[in-house]
Length: 97
Image (cartoon, rainbow, N blue to C red):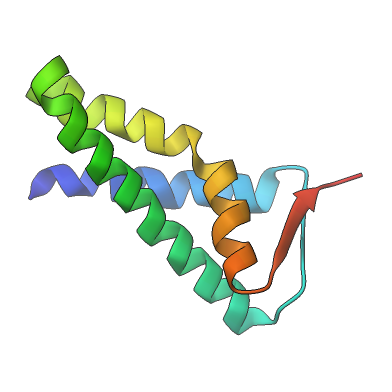
């Protein structure tokens, strides 16, 4: 159960960096929709982490295949997951011009 602490801590750090510091525009929806989009992003991140962990544990071993590689794959997918999850609640995420 302690292995879940790593992806949860990594997510909030990376989400803050991406949503607050990247050159993107977040348009539409109020605070409620944007918060819901963030929670959906969190759930989808953990979903990607879980699926990758299940798939890679047998291949790369428990340490790397169960924690390290799934966290890396889920972290790389944050920009795509952000656009999809925020779009589900009616918020547009695009590159800043």
